[in-house]
Image (cartoon, rainbow, N blue to C red; front, side):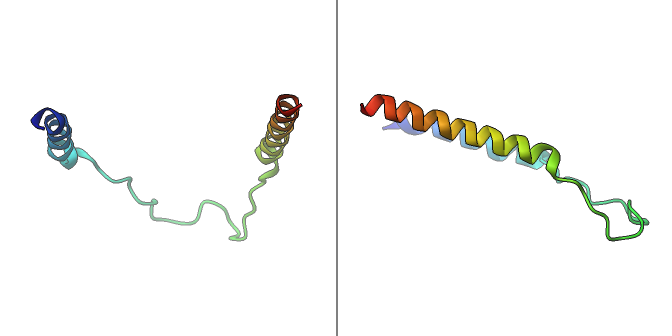
Length: 71
């Protein structure tokens, strides 16, 4: 039983002893907003359309493979 618990104890000890080195991400800089006037818009069409197209292509391939396998 000790052989099963020993690796877990070693990994846990290493994790807890090194946890004090973990630091949080700093907050946003103080000052005026990056874009002015405030209603800034960000275009999201650049990568989302490629992601949707890749998802449709992958779904088509999976359906095609399933049909070939079942017949």
